[in-house]
Image (cartoon, rainbow, N blue to C red; front, side, top):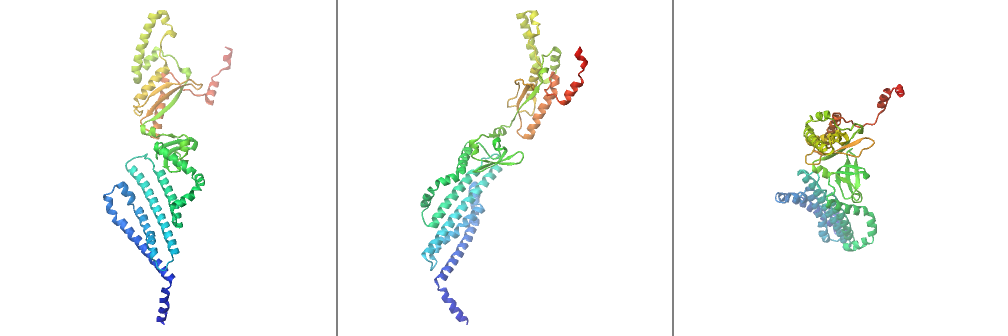
Amino acid sequence: MGRDVMDMALPSLQLPWVQAALGLAVLLLVSLLLQWIARALFTRGLAPIREFADPRISSVLLHPGVLKRAAQIVPSLAVQAGVRFVPELSERVTATIHNLAAAVTVLCVARLLFKMLDVALVAHAERHQAEGVDRAKSIKAWVQLGQLLIVLAAVVIMIAALAGTSPLIVLSGFGALSAVLMLVFQDTIKSFVAGVLVERNDMLRVGDWMEMPQAGADGAVIDIALNTVKVQNWDKTIVTVPTWRLMTESFKNWRGMSESGGRRIKRSLMLDAGTIHFLDEDEIERLSRIALIADYMRDRDAALHEARRAQRRELGEILAEVPANQRRLTNIGTFRAYVVAYLHAHPRVHPGMMRMARLMQPTPQGVPLEVYCFTATTAWVEYESIQSDIFDHLMAILPEFGLRAFQSPSDAGMQHAMRGWQPERLGG
């Protein structure tokens, strides 16, 4: 009974399709075995090379993920090389399997190059982070462009491999679809050109403070990709700006301020025009006791006395005593000199940048005294604290100079004024 079964099974092994199936199974097992061997050789055999190779190159080429993808190429190569030795396999089937294996090889190579680019991107970011570079140039746009080109090349070569023809013939077929491809990838093409110009001109980096009101962006750049730039606003919302808009629309990059080490204060103090007057002798004597402007007051007082002596010689004693003919100090000019001296003495105002106080054109809301200087830090919280301290002091010291900040009358102020008004005063 057993011998009959064996006699029935043995002739079946002589069938062509059985031999072909067994040959393909053996080929598949051999290809998988070769993949396991290649992976072991890559991961263990190439490990000593890390000690001698350039870290920037070895971190990419010898990355475990890259080596794993490289080992995945071996099975398809083995199938291409061994499919012709499978017995009882027709030429048509052999060619089909060979073409499929070739297409799979192209796919595996594309995946390998994809992984290498991803690893290079991560290694670039980690290297600059280790070096303490906060605003390194982003290569993500270039990585994504390379991946896009790899996809296009892989698709063309895979189609050519499946069809058993030259990739040039496939490309000639794509030439007829160029108009459609240009329409589909127009944003990608524009973004790529814009990305190249942005990177070449160093217009934007990851970590820069970018302000683009028309796009609703006001915050730190967290990612620069091929098609988009991500900005995290100060309210923690994220705005995605198409890369091509950076070349067609204007935006503000605050990197120059951050790298300079100083942040500008440019704010006006509105003074009541009705409180501006000439200083009398008592006021000059009192203001001369202020340490910050003591030298200024002494020099001005000496200059005024010299000017008055010259006026007496030129105009005579009588005309020289007319106030309109005299050169005198004003309280607002003296206060302006005090502001400049205060900015020069302030420890948190940047000493290497401009410090100035100037009077602007009078307005219905008063006379603006603009304070222009730079803080010694660019940190937002510290900047606001320094700016507030400066204007707290200046507003509090205004009465010392006989000045008052302008303020529109409130309802409470109007009521107070009405309570002080007496109707019987109208009759005189």
